[in-house]
Image 1 (tube, rainbow, N blue to C red):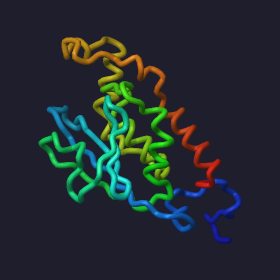
Image 2 (image 1 turned 45 degrees about the vertical axis):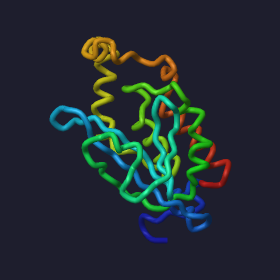
Image 3 (image 1 turned 90 degrees about the vertical axis):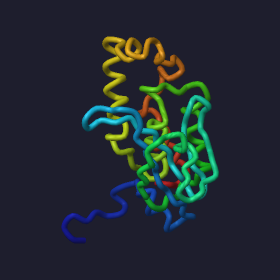
Image 4 (image 1 turned 90 degrees about the horizontal axis):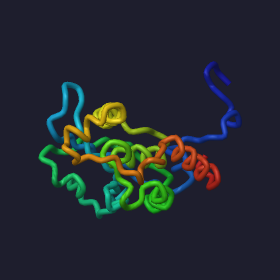
Length: 191
């Protein structure tokens, strides 16, 4: 064994992408579409995840699934800007497994514009599929908005009450979701 190499037995985890050598492979992409005015270096984004021929996103209706047609991301159609597509490659986790695991955390009427939104879902979906996290730039503006609103209610005031924190999102914690994903994947041999 050379310098920098580790024995396979030293780590109980195997990257999800490597598991495709042992299971069926599911192709994964993420689409992120910027919208609204934004600030220098900060924009609002809508993001969703594609696994094979289905697009997955999250809204007030819960997890949304749409048949995927190349170049036509259903949940991005209402935005003027075109989505930026990032190809991530194969996952051992299927779209059905993704929904089965995440639906308990992303239920209908639990959406919150700043704290639990489409980007939160795409972040957790990407972690579930490939042990990766969403680019933090996609979530930057909402994190700043949440921090500011938590201290001074500035977003609620600026939107004249259009934004109100959703109590159904109060218990959402990405760390708890990640812990659940890790347990699920370990129990089912994805790691």
